[in-house]
Image 1 (cartoon, rainbow, N blue to C red):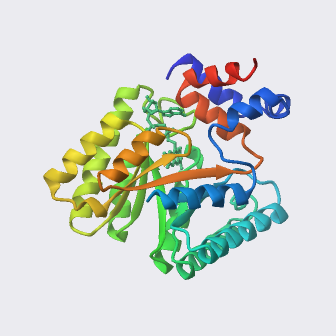
Image 2: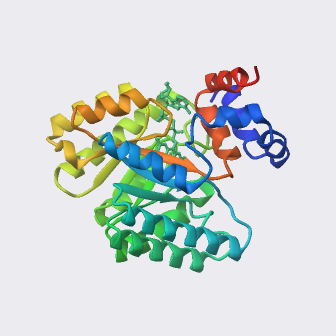
Length: 307
Ligand SMILES: Cc1cc2nc3c(=O)[nH]c(=O)nc-3n(C[C@H](O)[C@H](O)[C@H](O)COP(=O)(O)OP(=O)(O)OC[C@H]3O[C@@H](n4cnc5c(N)ncnc54)[C@H](O)[C@@H]3O)c2cc1C
């Protein structure tokens, strides 16, 4: 992992830096590249615009690690409202949640109930609930919560991170559930004992996991989503899907709002199911620092907004 990436990921956990930078106009302007606005209305409008272009979307309110029950309940209620709005506006839109945002560390059982309520509402709304994957210390509990939800609902999926050494085993353990899996490379600062430090190894693991998912999807036994902007990787996935005779509609490609927008549309034009993950909300500091860490060249956008 490069020094710049390590420093940015460490900075993402600094409340002092968050406080300093969040108020700066130049920093707020740079952030706007990655989110259509801070409020839900802006995110829904962006989702409607993508829908007009044939692209689906996934909405996520920024935030993690809430500190008390009232905050966790407010997050659950917020997402219940999002799903109601999605239904009312007839949008092809899903939602993605972080368990620590739903109070995992405050009250695990209440968090599980919230996931259950959201999956049920997603079902009613013709939508889908994704569970994000956070730092490695949450992987076991996240998979347990996912298993419980999957036992009750079909329209719930979980994210797996290719950089974790454990993920190939986790995938094998989940396959009997016929799961929806969003495969990503992984965005957090993890020690080499837990995550591959070299990008080459992460990419190799991603390809291996993608290949397994595509084979399962060809038999209708998994629903893979590839959450990546790595166009070379996506080309490889398309080739493997053809070799395994995995139908084009049996998997999706998801990318983040503001990244590789032209490729999103080009993939859609080629007949692939593409969704854009739209983040919104005021708690964007840690999340934005992770976006900078993914591509330290993005710091240039921050600098450009200084002048
Ligand atoms: C839909 C979706 C959901 C995600 N959910 C999670 C999650 O739950 N948990 C988690 O740990 N991570 C999540 N991530 C983040 C993921 O782990 C990676 O950090 C991120 O996707 C960057 O990796 P990449 O696959 O795009 O490949 P990379 O090799 O990092 O990037 C490939 C190319 O994409 C472009 N690119 C990538 N990132 C950026 C950026 N920030 N700004 C500008 N260009 C960029 C660059 O051109 C780069 O060369 C998610 C990502 C997506 C797309």
